[in-house]
Length: 126
Image (cartoon, rainbow, N blue to C red):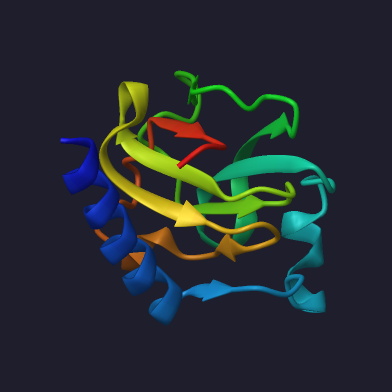
């Protein structure tokens, strides 16, 4: 099960990377939407391009983590500002479809993927 999930996560991550993943800081025009996600944080937003309700965690929160009722199944963009790769999953307890987001990378439009509004948990060990 874990091997299948890892392979699926890799495939989804590759597809997201090809479509929407970038590795530099967001464009200046979008700074207002992203400005509350400070270095060392993992941040999720309710809407594309870092807009809407945001929830963030510090880099020290490295264990498996349920995203919470306020953002569960509502995430449409995310940013990993930690020094580690973070994996996000569509089910609780790191289960379901997963995507890996490298250090400093973000996905600004999950609405273009099959996991939009589906993220439930994340971990800094993939």
